[in-house]
Length: 339
Image (cartoon, rainbow, N blue to C red):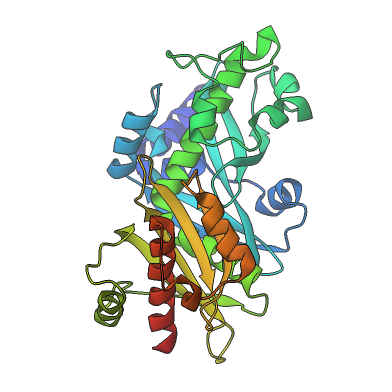
């Protein structure tokens, strides 16, 4: 008995001596990546892992965004898995642990590239209420939701709003910790892995608009001197339609062949609610694709131009701010494709 106590104390001392980073890695580890990917993304063919550090900057984001407390093991080094279907990014997976009524609930979350819930897998839990949550009926209530929609399922104190979430009375505690986990997963993912996520989103759009491409190349300076000079030629007084610091440009490429087109992303500054927008533009100045994460005024103008395959020449007499934004995008794409 004494030997067992000594061994237990040594094990506990060794655990307490571990750096917090090492504890956090174990705390949120994905135990079976291959099995999880096949279950959460049945169409997946491969995946890539990205290791990131959850630090004080993320803690500040959580403090502002979360209507509930979080624990110290939210921090340290963690892994995000980007999932591909035949070379096209289709989503991400991330394992998080949440303190529940019966200890730690380990959940693997699947998110689409817009960071909305697309699936979940209970990796480890002692809570018997998992029988009510590990069901299609519960999953369907979460699938497609982002941070704001998930928060809407909670009351001001962080408890589950029973009018908005259908769940057995005995499972409300675990439902609460599960929703908390989902919200933190999305916030942590968007904060820690912003750059690789943006590149994967650009690659997915590029492969959709230009099927032959196999990679994207990020342009370091979007509003270069050459771009600004051309924009000033097109506009007597140039005032960008976008938050320029948010802008990103990627060339859609395949091997050593000339670029198939350009992917442009930025925050559209028109209106009271800024919206993230994405365009795919080919070398002839035709818009191949347009996406907006939100609601845009006069969005039919943008969609119509995209679907009609109009070119820069059709926008010489711009009538609306949306058309001016399009001319700006086409100018930026044209200059970078020539370089």
